[in-house]
Image (cartoon, rainbow, N blue to C red; front, side, top):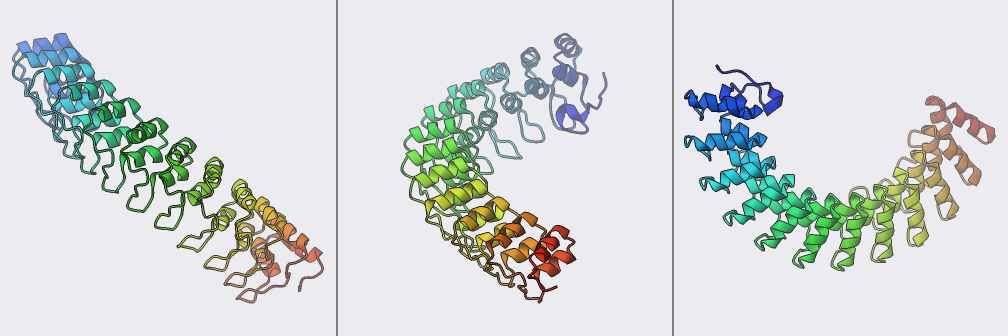
Length: 419
């Protein structure tokens, strides 16, 4: 058999130049492989990616072929391909326990070798993919670096925790050799990754060690609680709050708290949990825009959250941001009728407040064609229909110019606009 080119979809490369023995190793053709070896077919031939037949067999989990190749006594068990991965890497990565066992029994493999792209070990790959059986086999060797870091400074525990592999996390913690508070290059810990991705079981396991820094911060000053809240992982938030060791109102570099992120992303259940602690500042503003939480959710149209915040009785309903925009103006500009109605019902908003461009809530609603909002504002009887912005234009001017006929009719119907 001469060399052929395998389809790239099989191995993720375009030009593998595989030999007949490579093909047999891939398709698990033991009988044909045996005949090729008897006919003095070289078992260490490389394809264009530097992979030998043993790589193929290990990667695909074909134990019979692996055993056949090993029995020749001619194969390099620890040989690396161009990505720096040995047959053990591929078997561990793909969860082929039987093959891993065969390779380990040879006693000639480097169990702590690292690939060239990510710097991960076989244990790291197995942990990332959640292959408990493989992880167990590697740990039982007693020779693996359980806490080895890759190029991102992440250990096997990081990968298992971030991907929610509880069984693997248990195995790694049981060794007593892992640093549960290790930080990767983004200053994130295993708890951080588990919390951000909503893996309650893993979070619980890590907390039960009694050794994790529950309130650790990453390079952006975000805590596990903040990330869990931002992504709406209510169960994780509950677990973290129950520790009594988290900064419930801690801010990230943009001065946004867990409550800010939960509210902005419409996670009402999480918002309720945080409000119930009584430890959050509901009227804090961020550093970027000077917006309060109420302003932020009003702008986004988060009606349910707006209602929760108003019910606390602790928010400044008419707070202004750095552009002098109030929650009412932001809601009106974006056409959020339900939010506008809630704010008006408080009786505490300045219905005609202007921003730095001298534009009022009515101005923005008219300009953007939000008829329902315009109607609500007109019904208050407190708006200046002929207000002028910095360009000396009125709400009617912008409504006409933007083709909002319904708004134009509403304004003209009042009989109070300067035509």
